[in-house]
Image 1 (tube, helix red, strand yellow):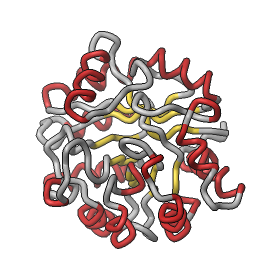
Image 2 (cartoon, rainbow, N blue to C red):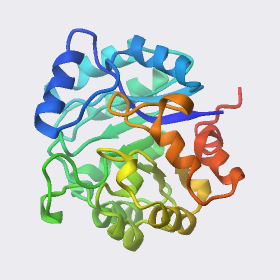
Image 3 (cartoon, rainbow, N blue to C red):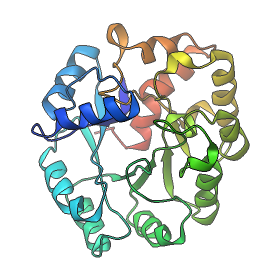
Image 4 (cartoon, one colour):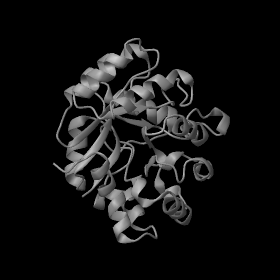
Length: 272
């Protein structure tokens, strides 16, 4: 079983604009169209059984329309993560609505949303999501042209404060816990209860395999999730360098199977 735990989808009419913006501003070259139809076709071609799919609103006025569209993309092979922002006045009811619609969690991306993980304004939202047994998924680490840690909102240190202040929160951190900040990941996140996904920007091919293998072993292979960041990376087997990169790590085959799908299968209760 293979489960891609990090993909993005956009409405057909705006997907080209989003991909162009990310290419110009972040230097990210897309390898898919970023639409729901294209993702499902990509999954079929790549041998992906399920995918986590995000919808993220950069500001409060876009929360409800983004979630309306996301809920309409419901599909048995997609695990949907909706969006809320602390300045969206009716965020509690919106979380209730998402859960009732089968959405499994909320994705936060401080690159586009002007939020900081350990800002106290976020804490009531975490507690509500924990109460509803929903997941919290964070972009972690640097992005785009960020070079200094002082420019980064979602640092491993800040995410660790969230972990410490909200025991039992079902938290997943993208990009191995901190894009271009793996030393901080080792210091602050490794060994905690958070899940780390394997997506990396611009590509996992830039990573030192020995360093990453050590990080994964120290954190625990049962808390690492295969992820690609579609449409900015290719998926599985013959199609994806993330898959080949993972196979090349010095890990037992059983641990690779955990990361490729079994951990996510357990985490998201995909046994029915």
